[in-house]
Amino acid sequence: MLCLHGFRGSGSALRAQMRSLVAGLESELELLYPDAAALSTGGPGWWNAVPLERNATDHDSALNTRAKHYEGWPQTRAWAASFFRDSGPIDGVFGFSQGAALTGLLVGLRSPSGAPTPEKPLKLDFAIMVGGFVSNDPTHATLYEPADNFALPTLHLIGRADRIVPREASLALAARFKDPLVVEHDGGHVIASDPHSRAAFAEFLRSRAAR
Image 1 (cartoon, helix red, strand yellow):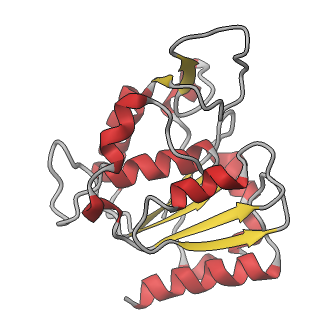
Image 2 (image 1 turned 45 degrees about the vertical axis):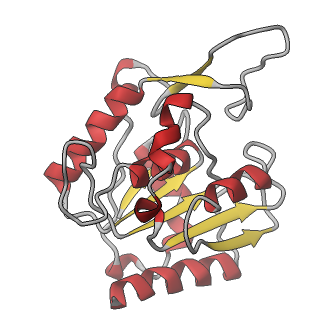
């Protein structure tokens, strides 16, 4: 499973954040924790969201609802295509925060037939998103349109007290999928490790392995 860190995060940071969630499952999983390509040149994450029209009311929230341009997206898209090609097969993707938003975009790039093409270069069977949101870069709208792309099993872990990515934003991402499994917890913008979240995570992965 490919694991995608959040904005200003890293692969090693995500590994630590997920430690409690995956405890007891280590023998059943192979987890890949890459860094965003931009980190090597001082970039903050998978992209940098820049407002298309800045004004006095704009602020730097990652989830400002004004339309934005995601600087670095072409590089991230190219990185993903190469990573899936060179490190696969990859069964599924786990994403936290900006990494969860990226996971949704990668689903839009997957080939439902399982045969990668230049337009749909990725092959994956499931996705897990924690504190995710829908991209507000207008150029990404078409990635959410193909219904068959989003007809795959997904788990969405959502914090009711999340002040970084509000619950409603994560639910909007979940609604893009055909039959999303939504699990809520009382925490904030974290990778939850409460018993209910852990049990749902383990059961979801074991059901995928059984198939």
